[in-house]
Image (cartoon, rainbow, N blue to C red; front, side, top):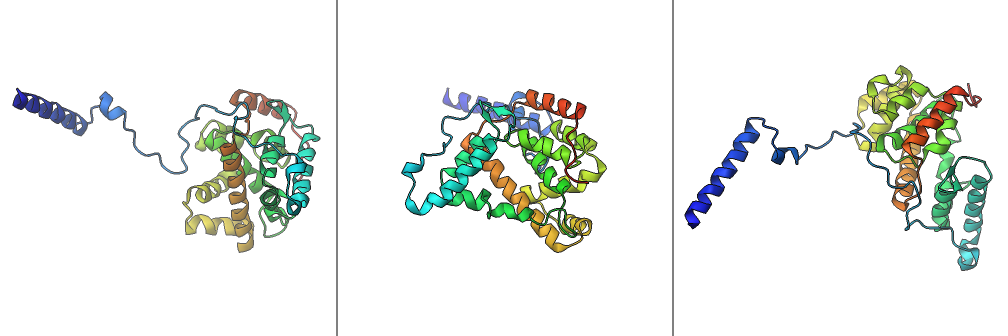
Length: 267
């Protein structure tokens, strides 16, 4: 009896192997998908953070902050208050940016290095100057990271800002719909560069083309710094569970902005 059972199992295994070799799409092979290529969007995941996650750090009361961190805390509290007063769209009952800056402010000395007045965000000081990256490169970063990932934590603020900086709405829609073939020609290298940095797929050819576009090595390095900074923000708020805009609401907002384009901030 034991020998018969072993033979039966061997025959069954052989049938699976033969089916897989013949290209049969049986249930067994369908459950083992191949690896996705880096930088290629495979479709939107289900949204998880339409409301703030329970784990999300909230800005602590000033009374519990150590004396040597009070100056940093006050700077981060000012950042929170500035977002609260901007009148941006509400996400889970708060203006955009409040949850983000509150989470960063929980560790205030780190928060100001990331987002304070003299923090890493100073990499944009040369933006739009000769030889540096432009507002268009800046805003492409803010579109590619959330729209490729499906986590829309950054989009409430940066979509209108992008359009006010003359970002092509065609590119935003193409990224939203995961249609690289519809990306505006002016933006193809920009999108490619962002993804190459994000995915660890940089090449000499992509780097050199961006250097030629921007006009200097410094511009490329600054853009690299900025992409990595925004990747930090994207992954940080995602890990904290900062609430995001729904895909449907993003679509509505984009249609509103197309009907009433924001005033350009730059030419």
